[in-house]
Image (cartoon, each protein chain N blue to C red):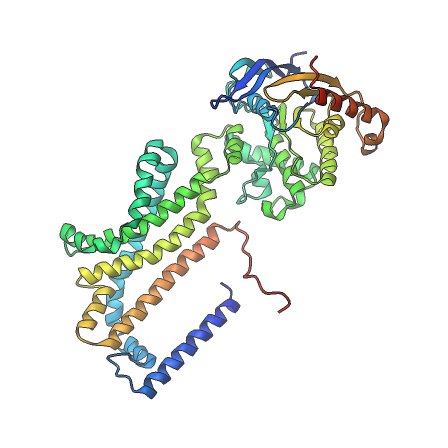
Length: 257
Length: 252
């Protein structure tokens, strides 16, 4: 995103915050219901160390869960591409299993794996896994036959054709999956922290909720949002580096405006 | 003189039961420019894929440079209907792809790749990505790629059919110029009668599916060929002759 295209969203955000601030002050809404943005900012500042302390485990779990999903997802997609048994037997199952809302199995994971990190990691992995598998498999199998034929004509081995043709071809789709996955991994970890954790942003939100400390709750949500945004930004920046050949068109503009 | 290509009683029936080629039999001598001419879907591309070793014949045998074809060979270069350039590779890296696939040393072939690009007049674009090139330029790059590992035989499957008419004529001239320098044997598949006459030493007409080789015509126009020749009576006599044999499905 260029500096210019950031300008408008930032201006609108600022406008919303100002209206919020003014409306809450004028209507005298209690802070326990809806604190003013300035109050939330003050809490982020004054309780920063507490928020940071809880952010770290959440961040760590999200990144680890995401990376595991990426590795596992690409591996399964390769199996789908090259093994007829996996493609015919397991791929439909994988697609259908998308219907199960993954967050609903969070309590089950607590029963199986206890209150530790394993449950959180597994939920993050599970929820982030599917978009990677489906996008990578779509990318690897959608290579035009002519490209594979060309690779074979020049005596490319299966590995060479995978490495030099199929995998790069799949990259734009893999990154599409990664961008979905990283946001889902955030949801996975936080939901798991709601259910079972003694630390983490999800835990902090539940705890603040219990204390009716709405400003702290919203400060934690704000911190979580920033973290999600940064993680997404890192993946998007990597995408621009790796998928450099994609022609990026600017948002079309209307007529003679 | 030993033959570059020997197609000996070759037929191809696909697993689906479609009989693409009934019986093809011909030879190509080294340095010859041979065209396979026929209507769309007559199996001429299939025949080319058989020679390339990308498909196996149902019966008959094919020999390339005195060895039986059992799969893709390193002494063959191939150009497809579309350029099939990898969009993430620069023009130069695309040309060097066969060198990588064949596990040859890149450094040994890079000067040759650059020479080919300059002969094809796309050397200014060596460091560019394919999407920055026009259709004609992409196909020139594909021709360079087919020649980079110095194959004795060049197979071309309707390489100019996706280009506009003007670019197409130009590309024909360029191809002849490159062919003149590198002296490859060329088997060129086309459905354009004029293109076949303009480029070839010899034209084989293929009958509609299931294909056989119909008439065979030696094109005795002098070389180097020029655009003006396309207006000559002799040129148009060949065109008329071939059109007639396609229309009547004449067999030898």
